[in-house]
Amino acid sequence: MSMSTGQAWRMRQLEACHAEKMSAIERECFTLPWSEEQCRAAFGQKAFAAFGLFNGECLEGYISIYHTEDELEILNLAVRPHMRRRGHGRRILRTVLRLARKMDIHRVLLEVRTGNRAAIALYESCGFKKVGRRRNYYADTGEDALVYRCELDSCQL
Image (cartoon, rainbow, N blue to C red; front, side):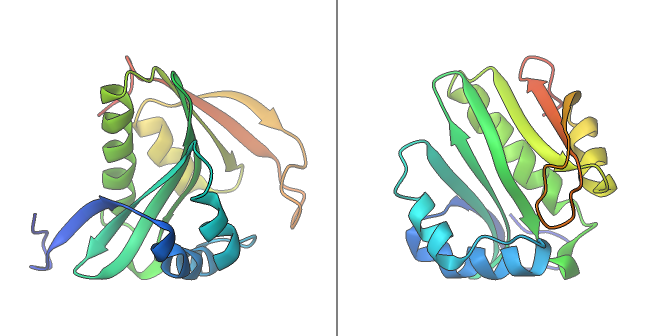
């Protein structure tokens, strides 16, 4: 698939060999980034999976998840700062939601910082509903986390 830049964009499942690239995006995007070792170790867990958006060979964004038979939790969704506001986050999210639906998963959960307005807008526009709050959840700032849920029957794919 080609987007407006004329370059080849594609989604693909990530593996432990992508841990270094994932960690680099983590450092660009998050104040509490996963280290390369944490990213690599996550792939050793049966319930973990990650999918990346590539522009050629460059990883520009990714999503990591835990999944069970009927539920999926989004751990991280990140797009490099210079690539934001171009629909890449939505593309990544919708790809995983469609995959979850094909796997007969019915519920998707996630946590997001209360101050992350862009992420909240994305999730709400895709059918996620706020279902809770975790007070002082983030160790770096003490910021609350909002808990969102999407029943896949009602998500906007």
